Image 1 (tube, rainbow, N blue to C red):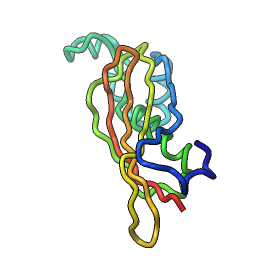
Image 2: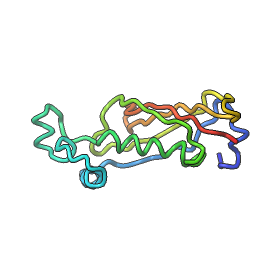
Image 3: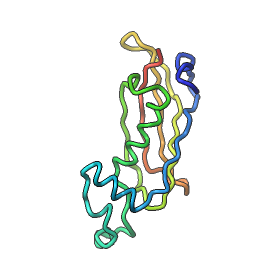
Image 4: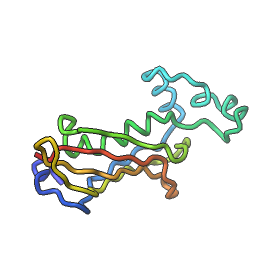
Length: 139
């Protein structure tokens, strides 16, 4: 669905999906440097195992940022009115994440037509890693 079709968006319409990954150790190290999240559980395998994890895993905000691209790619950042998410499971090294969204409600508020979009990030094995919701202006 192109940006110009926003006004005609209907409940049940799906946003173009985004695939991200596979998650690599190098990606986690680069994200740690860019974000300032240097928690060793994300970049040091020995530390992750000492904490009871099988290996390092992605920073939550890395997945959150990728999921946020879904409504902003579709509608534009200037139309985003709210965005939130809930971490459901860890994103592991080697995971390929698919982000999907579906319009679940159209409504009017503040003199704007808006859409509520249910968002999900899912690993290649079907495991949901993040769920969320965005509200975007349609006009």
